[in-house]
Every structure is written in structure tokens, then in C-alpha cells.
Amino acid sequence: MKPEHFTEEAIYDPKVNALIDKIKIAELPEARGKGLEVKVRMKNGKEYSEYTHIARGNALSKPLTKEKIVAKFMDQVEFSKTINWADAEKLLESLERLEKLANINRIVKLAVKRTKKNSDY
Figure 1: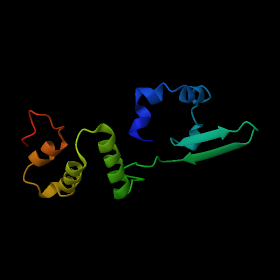
Figure 2: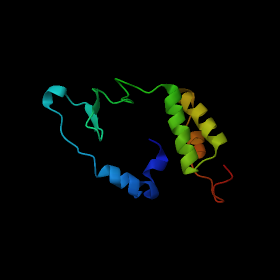
Figure 3: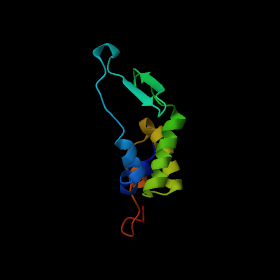
């Protein structure tokens, strides 16, 4: 999912709401643990299902790759238009060497949306 899937326009899309009306949420039997199962029943009655014990992105058990984390971050940057691409790349570089930084002022300055008041950063 991407940030644009959470806009009001996307949330109130009639096609999305028609799909939501078809979704049923149920608790899994305790024997299946605390994972997640998705079942899809087609119009012809055929069913497809997938179960996962641990959600993708779980920091301890099923972490995302660095490339996927960076891609998600850049998707957010592009969607929010809060900071420009060049500052986003500088921010990532700074975050990668966070332990070596004397202070985090540069990170804060790069992460803040530029306005006329703070554009002299």
C-alpha cells in the first residue's frame, strides 16, 4: 500500500467501498496463533487463501530490506511534498551515520518543511 491509498478521495471511492462491503473479519482459531490469514472466494466458488505467522516488516522476526525501507521513505517524501528529494537523500545519509553525529540539528533541519521563515537553514 502506498500513502495515496489513504487520502479521502481513495477512502471514499465507490469501488473501494463496494469491496469493503464484501469483506468479513473473523478471529482465527487459537491453534493458528496470532498470525493473519486472507481468504478470497471467487464468484465461481473457488477459494484461495494465504496465512502468515509474522507480518512482513516485523523488525525482529521478518524485517524489510534496507532497499525496501528506503523506497518506503522516498514514497512518503514524494507523496507528502514536505521536503525535497535532495534533502531526503541527505537526510538518509545522515541517518545512516547517526551514531557518529555530534548532534542531530542537521537531521532536524533536513526533516522540516521549508517555509520563508526557516528557509535560511
